[in-house]
Image 1 (cartoon, rainbow, N blue to C red):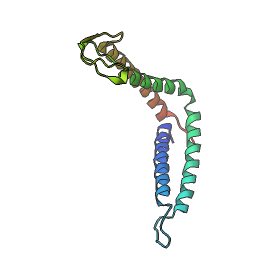
Image 2: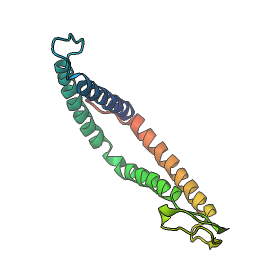
Image 3: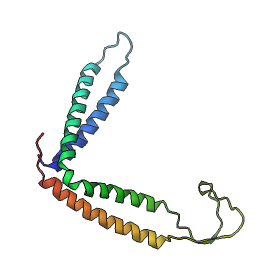
Image 4: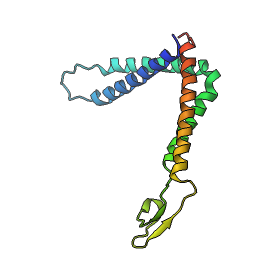
Length: 151
């Protein structure tokens, strides 16, 4: 199987584990004497097997992706940078400010705001990051599709 398929399989395991955990939590307690169609003991065994398989798969993926580790980490940090950039306040010009979340509470006075990083700069930086992400993701996709692993 190639690495791309392994990553999809990993995602399926994660979803399956979450569903099993939810069902076990939900159906573990039933009124005495009530017949249940759900065997939580069987589900627990299935959960333990799925968790084991996920761990094995994650180890194989981790080892196989070693040559791309820098790309993977750079991709992650670039996505974090975009989230950070989107949170920068770029409010400029005159106006009234009443935003307690930033520690400001100017209610009646006109205030003039300026920025070190204006909206144009922030958008340009986000655009650069998105270009970097596209390039890195393309590299990673090629690697994932051509890299064969054994499970």
